[in-house]
Image: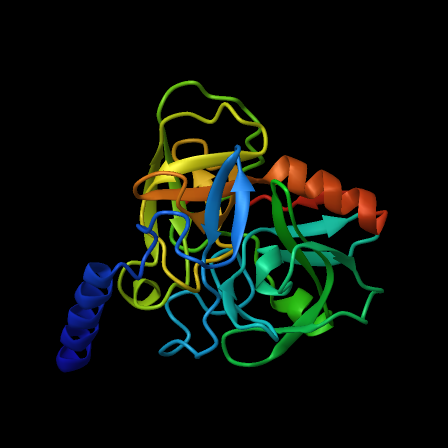
Length: 264
């Protein structure tokens, strides 16, 4: 066990030095998204399975999700007025190109948990403009196992739609390569949250963190999901929950609600 931990630490150090986590500037040649008028690189979706299922198994904010494209992180648990439950992730975890898709219930691409068990199918995804969001409608098994509480930090206690003009500390839990095994629970610092659509924060992300939940330290409210790197040195791009949720509601024709959970 000690040798494995040491090896992981050495690999992580090498990866960090090589620029694997989100410290790269936009314009590296990868897929991009425009957030706040800035061209940013989408966080890479790895196709290789991570080591183990990490410290956050199951169906909940911060857990691993496998899609036909690769491996990402689940964000918040939603429900509609008919009692159906959904888990979110990033749109680029299922869409290879810019656009927007809706699938009939039960007709979308299959999503699996970290143990390879089917948890449901995508019903909606968008990767366009300021939006990068995917919604997985959970099957009975996935819904029964789903928990709203974010790994490590707890919450979300609600949704944060405020437009803070001062620095804010944010909390993220992700399944990035190496970081998911070593430091899955991380904090970011945003200089402000003035934009209704997105937030830029200083922090570190890695391939596999895409879609991971971001909450506000102190209140525990849901802010958004991590989707990009770039737009400035060491910046992580976060798309905010309210506009993503509102657009998904319009497309699928269902009112959605983030399911709350207490903080740790």
